[in-house]
Length: 145
Image 1: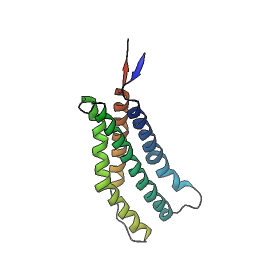
Image 2: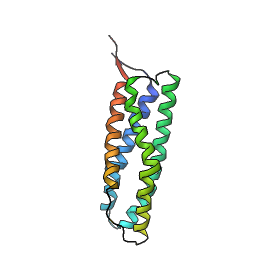
Image 3: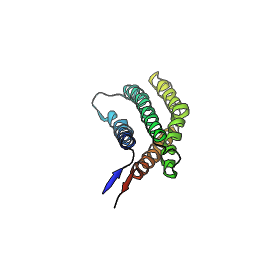
Image 4: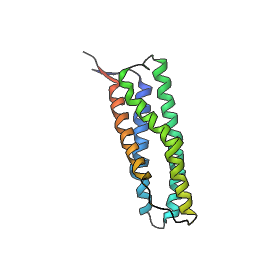
């Protein structure tokens, strides 16, 4: 039999993964294939969607942190796989998303924007975040004999 130690944390973790996968790995590039979507329009949509995703991710991160704290699970070694995504989320919030947002706005305004590796960083962060959250989520299940 498999039991779940902290059900709310499990739900938040896997829904968080779903949001990241749906937005970062599907919506981000798919919107540019829609008829009538220009690059500036797609960038405007992306700015809005990724700003909202960032806020939703913080809600999940705080909910998980709160649950780990109230269940006295905050010091477990497996929680490193939760704190890695939180660290990446902090870096995205204070550095990466503002930089990408600025570049997108410059492009929308018609400025000549030089190439950048920022999107590669973003994708890398999302991959590491998703894998870490998955490992963390799986670690919340326990087999009972």
